[in-house]
Amino acid sequence: MPSPPRADSTPPASPGSSGTVETAGSINCGAWISRWARERPKALAWADDHRRCNFEQAENRIRRLTGWLAGRGVGRGDRVALWMGNRGATLEGLFATARRGAIALPLNARLTPGEIAFQLDDATPSVVFVEDRWVASAREAFRIMREPPPRLLVVSEYEEALAASLPIDDWRPVDPDDPMILMYTSGTTGQPKGALLPHRKTLYNCRNAELFFDLRPSDRVLVVAPLFHSLGLQILALPAAYAGAGIVLQEGFDPQRVWRTIAREGITYHGGVPTLHERLLAALERGDPFDTPPASLRFAFTAGAAADPAMIRAYHDRGLLVKQGYGQTETSILTCIDAERALSKAGSVGCPVRHVELRLIDPETIDGDVAGWRDVGPGGIGEIVVRGPTTMIGYWKRPEATAETLREGWLRTGDLATRDDDFDLTLVGRAREMYISGGENVYPAEVEAALVAHPAIAEAAVVAVPDPEWGEVGRAHVVLEPGQTLDRDALDRWLGTRLARFKQPREFVLEKALPRTASGKIQKHRLHPRPDVPDAPVPPSDCPTRAPDPRRGIP
Image (cartoon, rainbow, N blue to C red; front, side):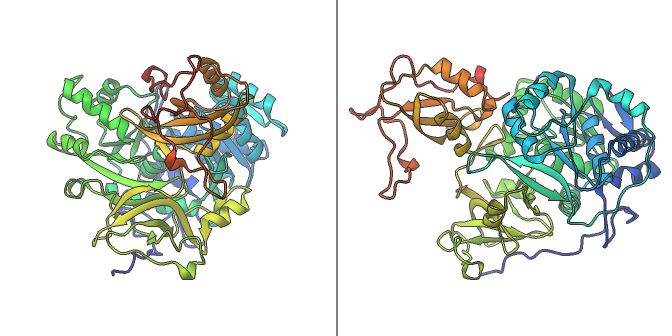
C-alpha cells in the first residue's frame, strides 16, 4: 500500500517573488499589499460596487486604517470584528488588523442578532466595523450581549475616520503561529466554535492556491462567495492578494450580472459552490446574456459540496475548465483535482495538495490512540485526517473540542472518503452529522437546540435530505410536549429569531417517540417519512409537513 503523501516543510518560491514579505523567523500577511504597491502601484488591487482602488491607493487606505486602530489601542492578540459584505473595506480591515498583530473576526451577515451576540460575547472584540444596512442588527446584538459591547465604526463614517487618521507605514512582525483570523463554524454540541487560523496557515494556503490555480499578477478574480466564508476569503480573495492579482468583489448572486461582470472586467477565474455554477450554466444554456463563457475566463473553481460530473462536462463542452477542491474552515484547501482528471474520475475531489499530509483512518480505530490508527487501502472507507502548516491552531476557548479534533498534530475532519491507487479521494459521507445546504455548513445539534427551546417541543432530531436546488436541506422530527399542538407558521417565526434561514428545517415530521438504542442514543438512520405505515405519526392539520419552498430558501 502506498504511503500517504507527506507534507513539504519548505514553501516553493513564488514566481517573481522578491521574498521580502515572508521570512523564516517572522511573517505578517498584512504586509502583502505594501509589496505590490511598490511593484505595481497603478494596477487594480480591488473593486466593489462602491469604489475601485489600485495597489497604491489600497496601501494608503490600509496604512490610515492601521493608524486608526493604533489610536484606539488595538494591538497584538486583540480581536477586530468585520460585519461587512463583499467590499474593499472588508479586505482593508483584515490587512490593517493583521499589521497590528491583532485578529480579524469576519461575521456572517446572514446570522440573527442573537447568533452574532453569541460570537461577540465569545470573542470579545475591541472594535466592530459594520455596514449601515446592519447597524440596527448590530445594536440589537449589543443589547443581547452579556459582555460590554465593543466600539462600533459604521461604514458611512469610515471615510471620515480614514481621513482623520495618521497613516502608519510599518507592520509588526509576528510568529508564524500567531493567530490572524478567527472564523466561526457551527459546532456539533449546538454552539458555534471559533477556528483560530494563524499567519502560517494563511501563507501556506495561498501558496497552494497560487500553484494549483497558476496565479499570476495579470489575473483578475471575481469573488461572489461571501468574504465571511473560507471559500470567498481564503480560497479566492487572499490568494489573489498574495499573488498581486486584481480582485473584483460583488454582492449577491445574479447569473446574468456575473457573466456581464466577467466580460466587462476581463475576469480570468472565479469560484463558488456547485449551486452557483449550476445557475450560471443554466443562464448559458438560455443564452442569457451569452451562450459561451467570455474568452478571458481561464477556469472556474468549485468547492463546498459535491459537484455533478454532468455539470463539469457541460462546461468543458463550452470551452471552460472547472477545477474542484475539498477543504474545511479549519484547514482550507486539502485536495484538488484539475478539470481533465475530474472528467475521467467522476466524483473525485482529487489528491492532497502540497504541504498537506493526509491519511484515511479506519473508523474502527479512529477513536483510539494515534499509535493504534489503521490506514485503509484503495477502496476502503476511512476518516480523513490531515497534518501540516495549513491547519488551524485550535478552537477559541474550547480546549476540549480542540483536543478532540487535534490529535498529536493530526486534525480529524469528520469526513469519510475512499481513495484509489493514485490517492485521489472520493467523499462518501460524514462521520459527524453536519450537512451542507447551498454551500453553508449546518450542524443538526445547533438546530435541535433551537427546536427544543420551543415550549411545545419535547424532543427533536434533524437529518439531511437531498434537495435539487440547495444540495441538502434539514428535515426535523419532533416530539411534542403532552397536550401541545404546533402551528407551522408560528414555528417558522420562532426559528427565524434564533437561526439563520439556511439552518431552518424545510420539512417537519411529528413523532410519538424518537427511535433509540438500548443506551438511549437516537437512531437517526431510522428517521424517515413513513407514509405507507399505518401507525406512522401524522402531523395534524395545523402543522403540515411541507416540501421545501424555494421562495423561502437560502438567501
